[in-house]
Image (cartoon, rainbow, N blue to C red; front, side, top):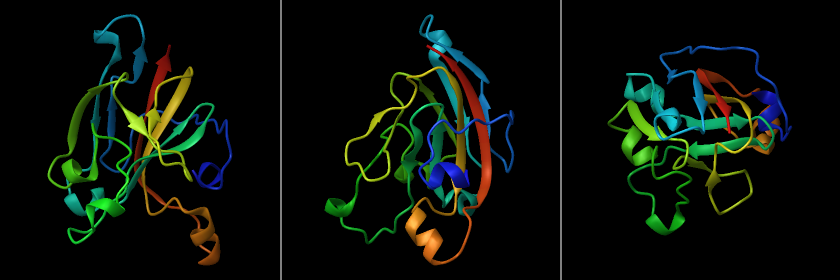
Length: 156
């Protein structure tokens, strides 16, 4: 994860399965029909554990943000919502998200327009991270920490 947060592309992940209370089901997705594109992402049951950045490392494009937590007092105009399917507003009270690969979006660091996540073939590693700002992590001399994670393998 640290390499992806630092901006590396094509970061391979050999690990399968989930940890920290996260699950990606089914583990293999394909673009053959609607049923093969259906997925369920389960986040940790504890709401405090979900109060992290939900990010995904794609096989070719690198890191994309799915949501970042924010406080109730944050002005709506100050927010960029990377995904309307799995958003922080929903993750505050829910831990299971049924979606499909066509609708799930994320935001690349430094961009303002979300993009579809599932494009290229390979493993998509979802994780709850303590931050994705590489400069801030470097300034604080901290490595990124993943508290939970899981993977989907995608065949377009």
